[in-house]
Image (cartoon, rainbow, N blue to C red; front, side, top):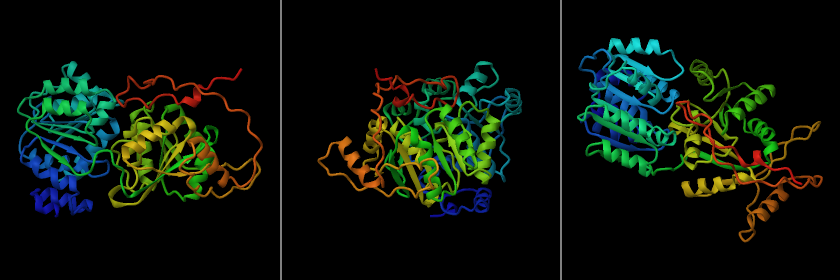
Length: 452
């Protein structure tokens, strides 16, 4: 099937051809005709399958006829993060360049005055994060009574970030006769409840089993001590001949410190997290996309939906606590049929999280043995070889010791008795007031107690 076979306008087909696209992905082929028929839809597909174009393309044609009025957008697209909202705006500019549609982007970190001016001129497409939209609505700067179409994108991420009450409130301000499109990678019960409440006889589309990882991505777990993570990461980057990579951390402070460490080691690295202002975040993303930097150290603000072509590797410097986040993180590589690799660092405190991830994806991830960093003054060693599987009957700790013993080439001095670990503290939402969400709880090893 080609885009020309699904009823898109000549202007849109011309823009697609110039962008290098001829055939739709499965989610696009299934969703676009339903959107054109003005059906409500629920679309479930894993990251990297082309969900964005599956609503952007038909919306351009649907909205081609009509006139926008001041402060009354004709359509609304809700995105969980600023980066996703900006990316959708880029898609509208690229595919809609032969249409005369007006667009406004409402996100935090940007001057509100310019956004208000755009709304006063009237817009066909409003792309917004819930926080900024609610703020302007409560100030009386925007009316939603003329909205003909609503898109709720990355709905499961909206749930994770606590935006569902805001979305429900927004839905009550929209016309009941609107068309609603809901896109998500997974379908947890709260999202199903939201769909049942606000969608009318929706067409259900699913092109991939929820919570499955891309088969084009090779996945590895790397056993590592917390203090050795940086050394192991630099060894892997060099030995894997990484062309470019995204490195995920759970906390913003870790992002900053790791980025500085990589820069000191001679790598071209940048960072992106919730504490960076929007213009700087956009510059860092553009530098990564353009090849000005090779490594992007990121919090989970970058995990969902960002489409950067040709990312060869993903490194989970910190193992994610939420299994769904693992799927979205590694989904930054292996996109559009390309191959990719994903390495996740695993400490003793991460074992429970890894078990949850493997349960979610339905298979075991290949585990590499312990990798020792070069000692001071030593020549850099080649990365450790993959360890063999331990005997099935051995306990977990014993199996790990057997595996590590086969890989470490030389005896090492007996280590001091490790610090005892306390249970991981209750998660802390240190980004609670940021419309980009928070970056995960404190890992257990940071709260280790001092032995008596």
